[in-house]
Length: 83
Image (tube, rainbow, N blue to C red):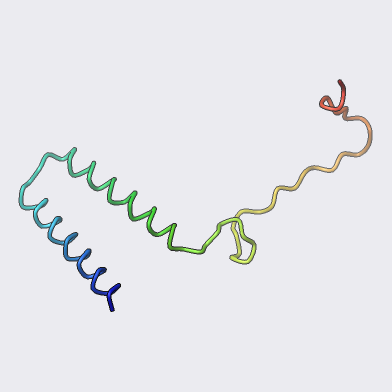
């Protein structure tokens, strides 16, 4: 119950701040700056509360694993092994 109350309070504060921001008609650069901060905070909060890992194969990742090309033989010399 306390989490719903705090979530409602945060939502009410955000709506109030948005109404005040629109009513005060600030310069466009301030609106863009505050909007980018808000999106960054939203992204950080969503990522910290999510258990999604884009590289975890259980989530059906769209990123294919890195496959190394197979070399045919000894024609390619390894420069790192020479010392």
